[in-house]
Image 1 (cartoon, rainbow, N blue to C red):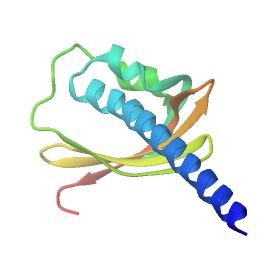
Image 2: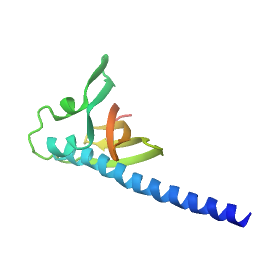
Image 3: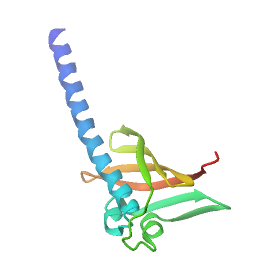
Image 4: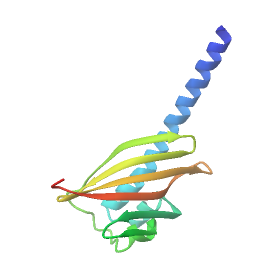
Length: 137
């Protein structure tokens, strides 16, 4: 019984440490996105995404584009002003994760939901869906 308990504790400790390392790597990936977005920096933002990542949303109608192309179009390196960002949550299950982010501008907030996968030891965003919340909501 004592050996079984010790093995359980060791495995649990290893799993928690591995998840902490993955959490840090996911946070780094998400920060590439947020930093790139706020600084209008396509090179930094692109580090966060898998090349085939998608971005989907509903405005007047459903839209779907390549995330990198859609996000970097028109980026000129001029930092955005009065923008606040935060990671609301991150959930991890093995090599898959989801994250909720908020990017707050003066009159509206983007609520982003990211799907992140770990492939070849690297965490990358593979899809983004978002909602635009107006200040009056």
